[in-house]
Amino acid sequence: MSYYLPLSKRLILTLVTLMGVFQWGVRADAAESVVLKYRFLRETVSVEELTTFAETGELSTSLQAYLKMAGKEPAELRQVLTKEMAVDPILLHRVLNSLPGELLLDQTSQVIHTPTNRANRQSLRGALMSSALPNGKITLIETLQHYPTPEVHVEGNRLVEVVQKISRITERLPKL
Image (cartoon, rainbow, N blue to C red; front, side):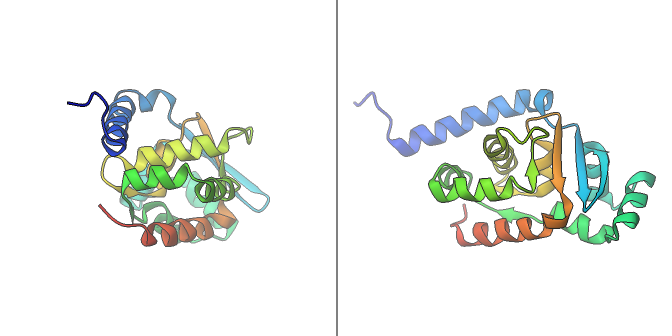
């Protein structure tokens, strides 16, 4: 009997272990607020506030005023936040750790990034994997909830474009 597990079993074991770590510890290091930017406008919104909006459609007074000033329809933002993209977490892990995946992360990190614009690729990779692991689906709201910095910056003008790009790529990947 071999003491070495095949690569696929080791990867699954690693992902299950990571899931356990994320289940126990993600909230301590997860984003608490989102700095939403449209052109020259900028508003800090709590992740909880965005989650409530995504789940119920209920807008806080400040988010409603901000979207009105930015000339954005709340329904469009809600659709972008809740769009589900089915993906095999193991395959996603492989893709995000490949050269094309890193290029995608770098492009996406121009729209969703850390406050300091450092470790964007790693932060986004971790947030996407945390979103995908429990149920094989990625949503933007879950990705923001799992972003590993207290604050995440989102360039709202390009948000729809990025979600569409990720959606097209995940549609091409084999499903669970």
